[in-house]
Amino acid sequence: MIGIVELESMEFYAFHGCYKEEQVVGNKFIVSLSMKADCSKAAATDDVSNAANYQIAYQVVKEQMSITSHLLENVADRILTALGESMQGIISAKVKISKINPPLGGKIGASSVTLEHVFS
Image (cartoon, rainbow, N blue to C red; front, top):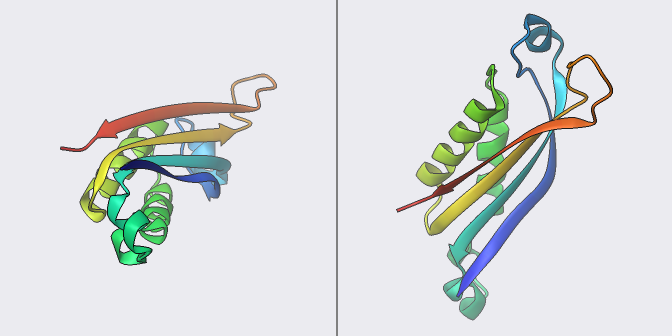
């Protein structure tokens, strides 16, 4: 039984951006994570040790968001790589990172990058 486990709208204040000011002042980011996993054992046993661990996933995202990058693509790739290394049983994962009010010279609610990785 394949299931989708999601952590939605995680908020972080981080220092990602191409402009020096962004890396000094920082900005608010919203991260959503979706992971496909085999949920058969978790559903049958009601045992958390058989489920995708939300806490590990959150810690991975939090840790990677704290490392300053110029590009959101780099942050998203690091999150997906670290998830693959930290969590067993994940078939694929998709992460969306949104920078709130990006400094692009106009009124913009957010700029976003979404990356997906299929684990072998």
